[in-house]
Length: 498
Image (cartoon, rainbow, N blue to C red; front, top):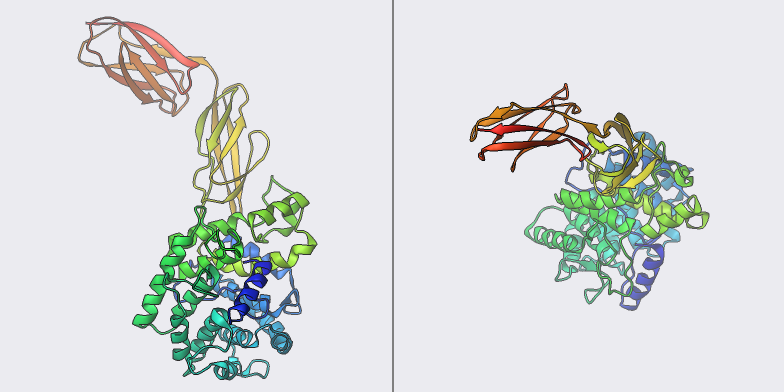
């Protein structure tokens, strides 16, 4: 969800009697009970490294809210090293009072901060001298709702109070469940205001609450809603409804949160698809395929449009750096379920002197690669094919596929025109298998043998020889034609069938 969209939604929510969010009014990823893959991906590590470069005095761009988002994403992806977390906690400590004093919704911001301290294994009852748990408890009304904060603040309250072991956690959780829409979503309204961010965020909050029949039912409905709104390429738009006046298309913030919520709920295949969408919108510097944007290696674009704008500009424009920072800090958690992949150009035969395309193998959808070694470097996003202008002449060409985290090198075998040698008995018996010997092939080259109207296939051994058995019924003189991997690699002979 973009900051601009959030402001528009907030105005609408206020008009409807609820105030949305606190601080930057943005949804942050949170840990949950389902284990993510153990080893952080290269993509997650790169995003964290880029964000590290934005940290000064323990805060990202001086912003407490985004810093908490980042810390929670580090926790989600297993990149929460003591040095990183310690520095961020110190930064939040120093800026907490001003953050709460200037918050758009102090109650929601207080609950968010309380959960942040608990998740970072700090005491939220003594955070920079503040008892954030007591303040959150005091903001609950008789029904357990967090003042006028709406779903955003309520989900933070559920997380914070459950993490702190508060006696008020149960009533706050019940209030969140009561606000779920009939279709399984949450939003600033159930009359067309359903929201992917709020739904995923509430889902994570309920997963952190004690299991009850009510929470189980709410979780199941929320998971079904999210799955129904996932796009064909794995991404999520903020409401999932393009007819919504406030709708923004697939974006990193929303997709990151949805990926984490789905993964935490055991929907790892759906989470992987969403995670792959995020990785496809990350700035990735690849050896051999450099570009001006490489200085921002690891940054995650809010959308395909903002990524293209940065590519065209040769770097992330200064006026939108904060948008990229927020997108990266929140989407990072979604990379927790990125599937491992080792893309290659398969070892294969190609026709020398022609232009040919070979599909990438072993790559996940959206994976960025650089193909070098045969012709000009090619930067591709999977699924894709590498196109080669193959020089004339039989030769082996080494092709390297570089991707974030590694590279693979395989051999593309170019085969030029040649006359194959065919050895066949002068006579063969009808209805009996005869062996046709073909020489001059490349090792492993396929060959097709045709005797009269009968066809058989074989593969050359390491010496370039293939022995193919054929059974012919029709008696008389027969032509033997053989063709290798390409039409210009051929040979012929004759025999008589008796």
